[in-house]
Length: 183
Image (cartoon, rainbow, N blue to C red):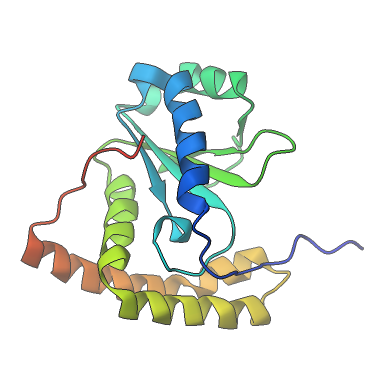
């Protein structure tokens, strides 16, 4: 039996923001007015944070009612819609065949899931001590669950929620609001 792709966490790569800009520009060109925001999220969006080398992109749309044209326009540039994704707060797409791995999350603008991803990213960008703890946890879990992606993701929940609790308090102190769209 063949093992699934292993979990690999690597040191921060300064090429990740450049890769996002290329991806984000292509998505913006395809979606145009359908995308309210296009943002680089996830660990690769935080300078200095070690991560799996996967670019996470979040596209905010007014409503999932316009999902058919979104699926069609993203398919036209190679993105594959994963209708079997169990998370109903988003529509999920994967990279074009043969391209480097990309996780494309389409969420409704203003939704809790959209805002949480942006808050988590922005908080980590301002708090290197939490980045360090998060990276240490990811390395530890990579060793423990190298071929068990679902377990790896689930095992990160405690530290993610701990960081989100701190991010919530921080957001109140600084009056956090998402900055401009990244693409």
